[in-house]
Length: 250
Image (cartoon, rainbow, N blue to C red; front, side, top):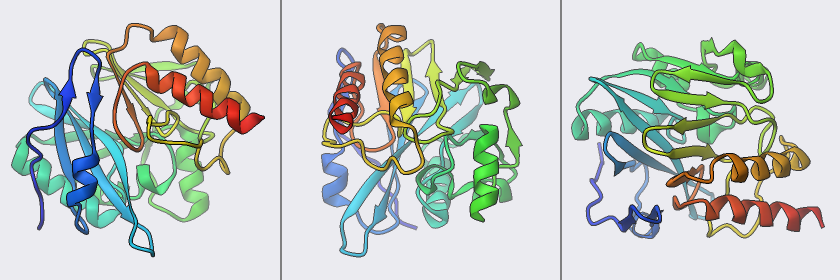
């Protein structure tokens, strides 16, 4: 089992900036990294390796709630999710009692079976469960039925989980950490390094524009935004995503 603890992370609390460039440079197959971004909050990063050897990072979150952990999104693949659980056990040494996957794509949900085999309850939007069944991929066993309605928000432990509406994916949900002012936006927000909206085959770009503009209005006091891929940042990620969507719509 390969794991590394990343030290000396470039992280400025004032503006909420985090760099993954060092991760890309030292990445090796099946490595998974966890990085503390606030007290009781860690970013987990795994990598997909394309056939040409290019690696692409994928983010998730780990949140401490008392003496247990909540996992937001799996690592990218079953093997990397196994590695993630091992790293969490070594680095944090607290049990994961529940998990949430933020939509049905493999970078969010492909490790669901690994979690459920460990007795971890995995929750999702109802459409996420439906889509994974249709795709023949790992299926989260529990749904949060209230999230079926656009604009719905529910408590998930200390977290607020909400469904802003279709965007990058038809089922993309987001997570707000009110005490930390951290918005886990997942793949519905693009990192500053991104120069396009990415994959929109399973989404609704017009709705995506609306929800991005709504997020800018509703979360003006956020400190940190976590995208599904790339470096975390602040409210500037929302403005950048809006710009990319508008460019795509031209």
